[in-house]
Image 1 (cartoon, rainbow, N blue to C red):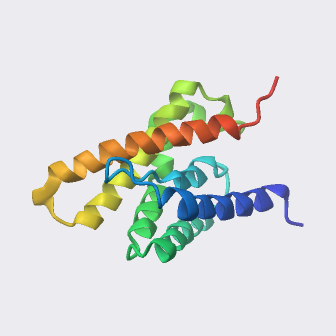
Image 2: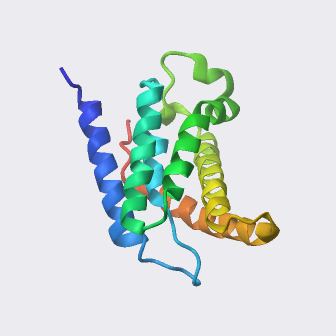
Length: 169
C-alpha cells in the first residue's frame, strides 16, 4: 500500500512546479533576479527515501520547469546535480547526527537548516547560471547572479518553509 508520504511528495512536486511557472518565472527583480522556489522540493524530500528515485524525481522536476520556461534543460541539470550532491552536503552540515536512524530535518537547529538550504541554493544556482551563460570569462556575472538570485531564493524559501511547516509542541 502506498503511504501518505508518496501523496505529499506528489502534491509538493505539482504545487511547486505550478507556483514556479505561474508566479515566480514572471517576477524579475532589478531586471535579472528570478527566484527559484521549486528547490524546496529537494529540501523537503525525506532523507531515508530511495536515492535513485530521488535523483530521477529531481531531474523530472527540473525538466518540468524547463518545459514551461524554455531553458534547454538547465534546470534539469542543476536539480539532478544537487540531488546527487545532497548526501555530501547533509554530512557537511549535520555531521554525525545524520547517521542516526531517527534523524529528521525538523530536529536540526535553525542555523543548520538555513545552512543546508543555502548550500543547496548556491550549488543549484552556480550550475544553472554557469550553463546559462556558458563562459568562464563572465565569471563575475555568474557570481553576481548566483549571489543576488540565491539571496532572493533563500529569503522566499525560508518564508515558505516557515509558512508551511508543522510546528510540534
